[in-house]
Image 1 (cartoon, rainbow, N blue to C red):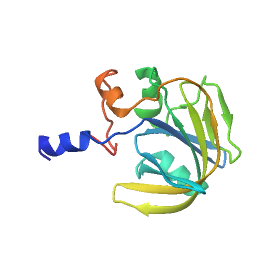
Image 2 (image 1 turned 120 degrees about the vertical axis):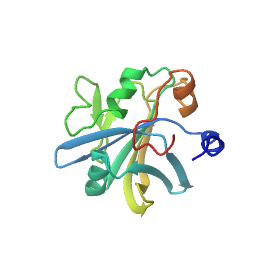
Image 3 (image 1 turned 45 degrees about the vertical axis):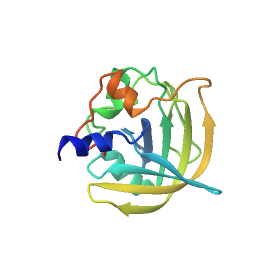
Length: 169
């Protein structure tokens, strides 16, 4: 890909989200930058998840996920806990204040603005990633009057890098 191509993709606006799921006692979490609402009534959202991630496998088996937008003041070590390590050999939830959604996904209460509790209805194979599309079963605000973190802010201010397997460069 040439630089103009990459620059064109970099103009797309993204947020940064923790996505969690749980299956048979195994919790998993990761950072995604691709979450979008696809319908309003009923409320449905879609996320794009790399097929090589543990969280992908857990969502596929459990058919549930929770998504939490990060607040702008989230620091890089916290983001790295969910975005640069694998849950195959690291407990991403150790020492954190979490609760459970009605569907059973972990809800991270630190640095998250809200949560969406989602029941997966459909998967779309898009090559390296799967789009999981589901109906929002519950949603709640956790932090009020706080700015969400955008992918642009993450790159320009925090100076974060996109990990291998991200949907965006």
